Image (cartoon, rainbow, N blue to C red; front, side, top):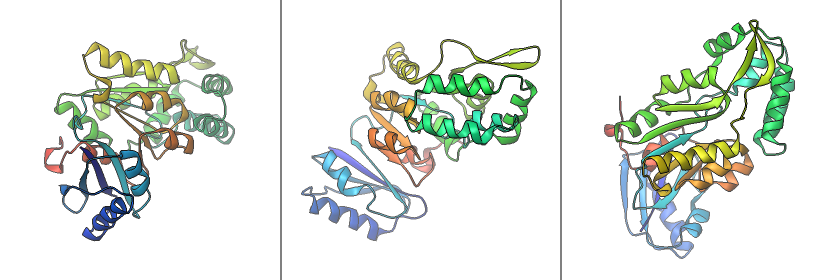
Length: 292
């Protein structure tokens, strides 16, 4: 049995649910029932076959509604591995840090290309960090305090999953001076990230090795699951950039969150309209079950 969860950014009227059921029927799939996860916000549609066809029929069908399709069994995940920049927080930290050096436009252009998968992530990271050579170390803390904002839904997502017994890991191609405080604030068990090297109170323009890139993110997911005896089908991975694709594709539920086109195409599920609480509804958590 499969589930298509319709999740509304605002309100999910019954007419939209009926339209989704009609779209399934038009694609040759007979719906086998509906049930609210949260009244007027998120609804499950049950069906028995062909999830790929169902996804094509439903994604983008309803304005303001995201759709996540998955097997009915094991929908509540035991492992969460998440990207940080533009996923768990609303900014790209390196772009904002570069603004303190007067280089935001130049760095942000490279970041965008790297996240789209147009250029190599690790080379692009080295090049951007090199531009920051000589920036005062104090700019890191200023940037974090002044500009980092947690993405709506991040805290209830992580805290609810941990309350239910899941292990939650933040894996970032960004920097530990941002990732560690962010992980603690949101409620992650642990974070993995890159280190900006500092000497004499200033950035050296180098990043510590080995660099946390796409392969590290994938390996972190696989190793975290293996260490805890968790099947990869019971893992949820979420990110927005090209360096998240291997991680996303390795998880039982891999989600592209307001992601670049290449990532959205590669992922098994997409969140384009809602915030991160959509991933709680997708797992069948009603609001009454969310951690405070």
